[in-house]
Image (cartoon, rainbow, N blue to C red):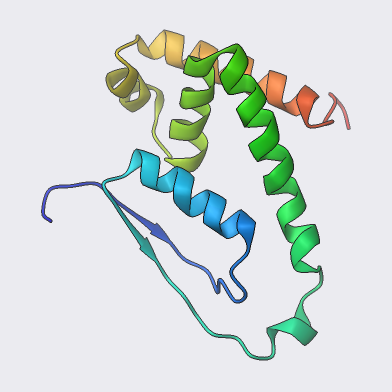
Length: 125
């Protein structure tokens, strides 16, 4: 495929976790093609600082919060997906969603604040 948008998801993915699969799934919603770099690291289990469950906990919390946001404001949730997972800027988001770049920026800022509160991150902490 030429001329399409491609996302590269580098990482060891050893072991593959639900968090990894979530990132890949969300990336696939935004890009035409997703390339996943996989490296086998047999010593990784003894060298990790955090268990797989701990590494994935934040992504699971974000996923649940994003699902709740999607029920409240589907466009804001889509803006978050395009910005956070897709890496699109406000102009690109505006083009995809057929909104102004100012609306894309406002949706991003509003959604980000809502998600931080929903996930338990409070100002100054």
